[in-house]
Image 1: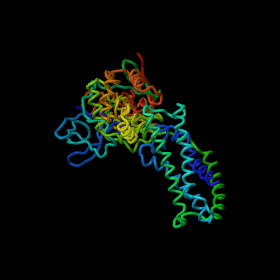
Image 2 (image 1 turned 90 degrees about the vertical axis):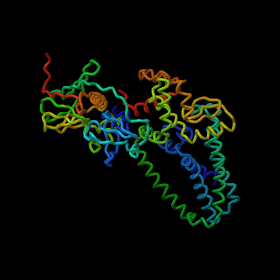
Image 3 (image 1 turned 60 degrees about the horizontal axis):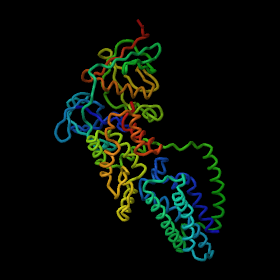
Length: 204
Length: 306
């Protein structure tokens, strides 16, 4: 059972919840959960794993769906992408075809980065223009995926216009597509796949 | 002369809205229409209050300056009626002649009722404003005639300058579709959406598509208008489009009943269809291009289009 039905332009992939200890926060789309009694559920992954929470109705802008949990088809295969620094592109496979988008990846070191689940909603990082799809943005601009190379080397994969050591996807529609693919790739808890950063792709 | 001055002032006051309101009736065409149409009080205040203020100010100012008016109440009635007939009367004629200037809804009777009611209300508002202009205790809010003339000239020149600057700098007023959809979502009762989910499941329909159509209908026909339609439908036992889904029935039905009837009729087995095929389903439901576009926008609002 996972968190679903929160992909509209207001919730933007996040769902407001309140834990039984009184803490309020938001959990991301596709979070694995276990249903408990009286509308409560146990978070089985994420940074609040183990918390028993219920939907914070007062923070829902409207009630478009009866439930925000349900079955969701996720792939057990990890999502894989390559970032080529020399051409500033991210390349990945979708439906048997190679898809590419322009990225900004300043000061990023080559290597293999694990893509982890988003830690929190980055409201502070996304302007109104970023989330406005009518202006070329993406409703998922507030979701940043942590990238881990070694134990203590953190970067982020996100949508935006400039990079400060992160991998920044500059296409709004591209980011929406990437977000959905990454979110639905769940080989194991908190882990979605890998991004291999290379200077130049060597074709054999 | 006073009648002419008053109707002209009211006319220019509404000039900005004239191309969209009330001719376009209700719809997501611009922010003002949405704001006004969603609440009957906003609607009636928007239509009536400016008329009362203008008639009271003009007639009252002259009487304050001891200019004897033949019958202020009759003058108020005349101004209110002329203005109402000039606007809502024109819409009624457009409806009768099936002019393309005004959108014609299935329940055209309710359009006639709204506009006829407005004519009667504006006539009444004119009488009230005319009467108020005779009460000398209210004159303290009105200017003196000499001061008024000076102020009119000063105001005219200032407004002219501001208007020129405004026109030079003005960007087209954009409709924030997301905001309109979010507001409609907040208005619609949650049991309507829950019912859509259950009925859609039963008929293998796409609940998001049905919700998108339902929201689009609510934007075009706000709840209070549907209540008026239902009321007249009950009184006159008239066939028409009723409920949130605006479904054709012999007698008025509520929102839930309209969902129960429309889903099997238009949306069954559409769950797994492609986006293009779903668009055709909507076209079958309502062929109006603006409506289909609005449903598409709402669908994309609810779920990413990929």
